[in-house]
Length: 60
Image 1 (tube, one colour):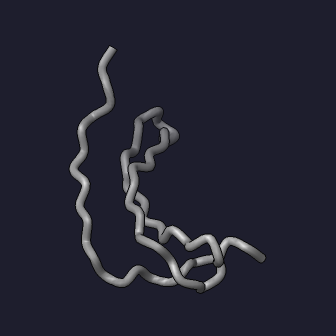
Image 2 (cartoon, rainbow, N blue to C red):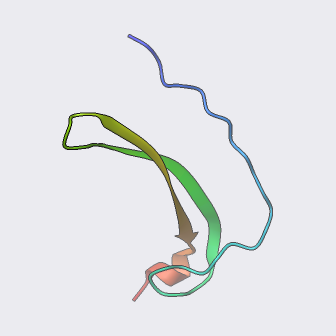
């Protein structure tokens, strides 16, 4: 059994974009692995990028 693959983490201190749900402030912009299996049974590896909202923007 193999452990998880090591991955570099890059930290860039810029302003993060507004929340895509509420357009409020965000803490950071997260980039993470996201893969799926296509119709031919092949794994399609990709990366997604999403802003992480502050606690205040999560409330209705």
